[in-house]
Image (cartoon, rainbow, N blue to C red; front, side):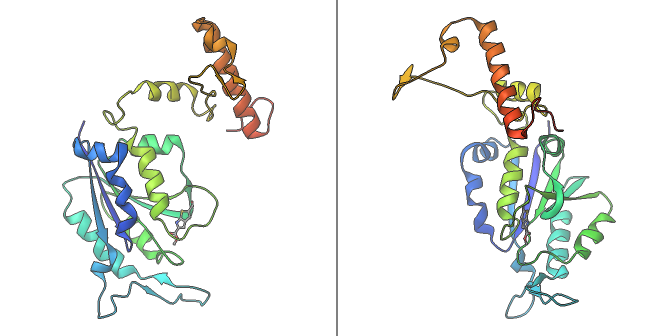
Length: 239
Ligand code: JA5
């Protein structure tokens, strides 16, 4: 089990402050992962340190220039001891992030996240690194909606990946339960804790019965009902 390195490149490095918290913060402290954050603007030239320009072909907004990205990514690759690198670009044009993709990425040695702003990054950056030896480029989306940039989508993707790394979760039982239900049931059964009655609402009686077989089948049924409802189907299987 070798440690996964993450390199994040952005013009807003402060977006990644939450990575010091909770599960991901502890994973770094216990040396299960390392995270380095790079300011793209450090690679920009001139007094204005510009990282964007007008789009060829016209149109609204600005496009991120390829050369600051080339310098930043080359520098990350040169300073890496890894032999294989995944360059991940969060873009609404990417493949939809799934649990399966998160599982796959949790087994990699070096993940580089390129976070775009404005109208996105000059596409030649993707093309160039697709041909670079030892680099796999992955364009990912976290859903069909518009964001201001790739930073928040990167945080989502990292959390999905990092919690799957062995040793990161205190109680890996939750991973075992997930792996039994996914991908057929993305939705779990509803949870209840004390008090047994809250504002007139009782906890389902079966959960107080102590009958573990009955509880198990009740929970499975509840998960099926919720999944079917979410998918708008009777049997809840759309994928
Ligand atoms: C916007 C320059 O999947 C949702 C996403 C929206 C969005 C992403 S991922 N990246 C960007 C971006 O804007 O880089």
